[in-house]
Length: 354
Image (cartoon, rainbow, N blue to C red; front, top):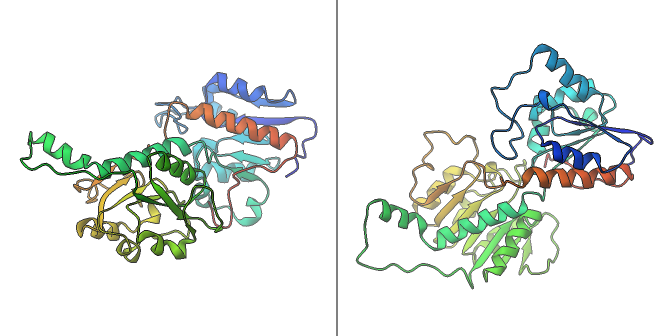
């Protein structure tokens, strides 16, 4: 990808960001002009609150200033208003736009939801923050595995009831057990690294099947059932695409060993939740740690809320106090690549939307 702006490049900050991190972006190159008007951006309610306070409202004058700022930019840091509708609007109003960097690791869904046609999507690039969230997600996956192996849900029930069981129930050793990771990208490989440090043997799936150091067996999705036969735990990191939708169905859960621990830090649409509930109830899945769901927020009537073998996390496992800094550093590195005419990493695939 060649940057056609040979002298000056204008970057607009479209989402909340600390001033010191904006200065970090400005320091990338003196040829870069960074447009940043914090009074036009909603205040963050928590670290890396990219959407900001939903009660924040711009005046008509501020709204005009916000869009005028974005329409002057060649590059955007964040989707306008952190929404698919904002992406659709800027794509139609800013003919000079070359690149947008998304805050999410999986921004394909938002790009798809914008409803933009392929001709429009070819006019600019969209990159994601993939990799920034790999460590917190991998740590959460390890938490899920350990909770399943060490019976934390049962311990919590006994503690709440002040029950000291007469019979002592053993827990399972993580060391020497087998993990299958679906999606051996940056998140999956970081998960595998931590799992190996705990003494686990790791296999997994990858779209392009090839040997990977430290991974026992690599297969495509069509070989997933074969890997599951020996798995003690499974971690899904796959994005939500038409090719992964309900990948974890009744047949796949049936291929697991009884008592398998299942963790999902990818996308909720990858799992058939009815099939998961059946697997939990018949013992095929011994424990499920879920950060993502087919419908979010998780509906109040979902049986997953109260299931004794399920830990529910409200899609927050990637969040860390360091996230804004890490994303700004990733963007700054990408900006340097952009200015040098290099190929931007982590581009959204506008055909498969991941």
